[in-house]
Structures are given as C-alpha cells and as structure tokens.
Length: 259
Image 1 (cartoon, rainbow, N blue to C red):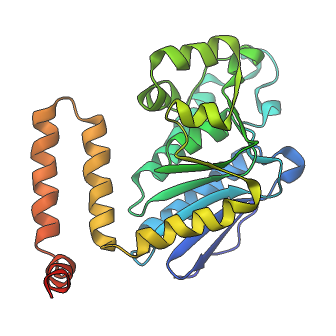
Image 2 (tube, rainbow, N blue to C red; image 1 turned 180 degrees about the vertical axis):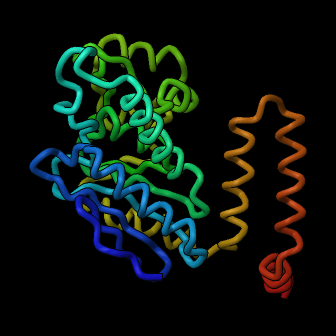
C-alpha cells in the first residue's frame, strides 16, 4: 500500500521495511502535535499493511533521534490552558506511543543522537533500540517543573527498574549510550559509521526467520510483559502458540528444516 506525504515525517517502504524519519532537525526533531498526528496516521497505515516485516524509526541529521516535546506548547499558567483539552491531548500522545508497541511488525528505534523526554518515551515503546556511541538519554521533565507522561512511568520502569528511573527523573540527569545499554534500555551501541549496517543486519535477520512467527512472538511477549500473573500469561501464550502452529509458514519451515 502507498504511504502518503506527511508534514513533519517521512514513511518510506522498501522490501517490507518501513522507515519513519523525523524531519525537524532545526528543532532536534522535537515532537509537536503535528508530529504526533503524522505518527498516528503512519502507524495506522502500517497496522493495515500486513506485508510490513519491520519498522525503523529515526531522526534526520546527526544530532538527535528525538529531543522530546516542543516545550513552547506548555508555556503559561494552568489557568491559560483548558484542562479537558490538555487531558485529551495527553491521552492522544499516549495512544501514539502505545500504537508503536502494538504494531504487528517489530519496531526498531535507530537512535542517532539525543533521545530525550518524549523521544525516550517513544523509543521505550519500540521493540528494539540501537544507538550510536555518542547518543545521550534522559527524561529532564523536572527541569521544566513537570512529571513524565505518556505512560513512561510504567513502561520505562519495566525496562530499567524503579531505582534508575527515580534517579534519572529526580535529578533530570542524562546518561550516555554505554550506560543506557548497561541498564537494559538499549540493545546495542555502535559507532556512528556502523549504525546503518547494524540496523540493516538486524532487519535482515528478522526477515530471514518465520515472519509470522516473529509477529506472533511479539504478541505473546507483549501480553506476558503486561499480564497480571504467570497463569494468565501462560494461557494466552498457549493460544498464540497453537495459532502459529496452524499456519502454513510453520509447516513449511519445519519441513525445510527436516530435509
């Protein structure tokens, strides 16, 4: 299916891979409302396109993956903002992050620079995060008198643990790529000239497996990560396991393996 022109991002499909690129380098690829709206439409189109094997999200330029929210929209006193409109806005932003998490193909954050605030939140809802070695990470919301939003207090805590999240948020601190990897937020750290090839290799490895099995594995893992208990997780895992077992893909790949 064709991907239409957007205002602040591009979405380009090539050989089963959709690459989404933020195009606001002058703003360090900050997330304005327009960017969120573009992302929501792109994610909806990808969800309808069952021929997509993987999604890669990155930022234009060498400075930033995404620097977070466009802070200007939060200026002024609370009295100057409609609380109902702000509540709807925040729910919309959260729905965009969640849409990345719920996409049928794996989503890779290709982190080519600063990954801060809303950019870090979006990256946390991706399946994999691959970063250049000079990338910086942080959630500096307390620096502007706010708290983290978008479901990040739950999602990022899932990934790196309560103690580290509290340290990062309370101090508005930044960490480098190596520490982000060491605490479990980033999967791989590479030199800048290796970033494209590394992401391409990961995508190729995904496409070299049972593609439907990958997507069903994502469904099972995502459910288990948020299940209330292990028994509920096991039950859903078993349902998806049998669903995948009944596919032509499983039958074909097992036959090929046994030949």
